[in-house]
Length: 125
View: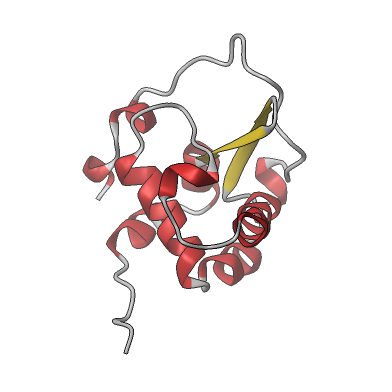
């Protein structure tokens, strides 16, 4: 499944000249129960899948996704993903840009990213 990843996740860019990451758990502090809890929400799972498969640059703002949701709602979802250790975020001026913590998740929970990539959301009625 990892062959579905966009090139930026295969060869990640360097840390040079980027703002620092917003507060997030260390790799060792990421807990599977928290990861499962945040990914149980369909919009959050969609966010992670799109970042992994459609992202062509380092990181993206919530506007990149084109969701028809209030910015405050999206901010809440991105914060939940960051606090669970699924995403990392950096502050660029007024924007927060996000990226999946691929290396940390693969190290901590081998196979989890494959499950996320393969998961299909249930059809909405």
